[in-house]
Image (tube, rainbow over all chains, first blue to last red; front, side, top):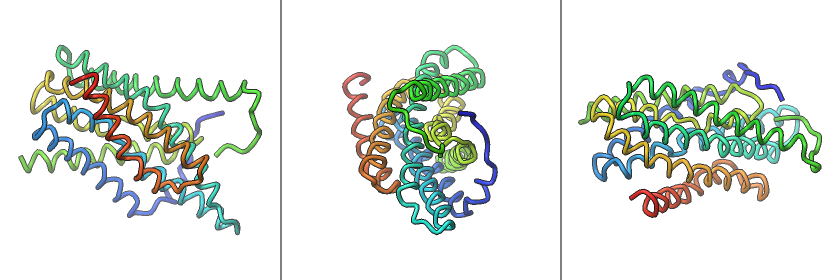
Length: 152
Length: 114
């Protein structure tokens, strides 16, 4: 399956949906600082892997799929939830990259340049997450239970 | 201190929004989902932390982040299963499972990293 960008998705997103994600992301990042101040870096570090993007993303995906099906005269409830579930499944695979990011920063940051370490860790996050997604995709391709259907 | 929180808020909001927009435009959705697990809060938080408190403090936070990442995997896997198999709405699944993420992250940290 070819990965591609669909820029029309940007037009489907309403301004308040962008605002909610900005406020939520900002609040979590600020809260992590406060937790670190109160309870130290050990506890605050947990919140660096807080699901800050996923809840809003899954909600939007479900709403957009439902809206698309409504326009075709269908309910779209089931389709919307399946699309959100697929997004969640992708996020679960992406979490391997999040783990690699954390471990790499822990290992390298005391002795190396911050920009270099964060750059390499972000690159490795993407590579690890993509490999996890690709492995799942290949597994699905060769699975005897494979069913045909249009990709979401 | 209020200035630091304000800066964290703005940089965190922008980073999370940027990764979320990338996830919005990518297809298929299973691939776009990878960006739901992007290190957005980590990038913003660690970058600020390195400049304000130094590399060793940031390393201590990054170490705990590993426990948070494992909890994140459990959280999203459960959310996916719940929505797909039990037909639960996305906002309900995403919100109701946050305590699971929290319990798993704190539990792992307490057992393995404290």
